[in-house]
Length: 129
Image 1: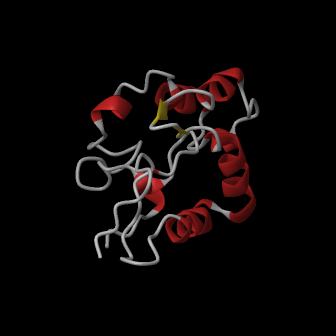
Image 2: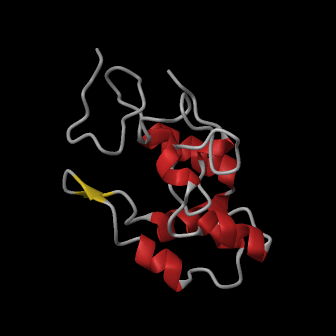
């Protein structure tokens, strides 16, 4: 099983551990190996975090900003809005710490049958057992 680390916590509050490209094709927002869709970061979170001197959106004095609110309402695949919980998740990251949040997300998204991480876009999960 691939075990996510702090690199699986996106600037914007996404849990990258449930992305099919993590960690083989992407090592997180700040790495040299970023998923093609994320390297451009159309919403601008990578650039914005640098401009505001923060690593995660919850550290910003403008949290939650309009950019983040708009982002939380897009990207629906197979009837699932992948971004709908980012503001809640960022608040939780702030409350319990990023490392603990990643551990919690890993536990929540691990298949109890096969022990593999479930991809966010699977509906339902395709168990490898």
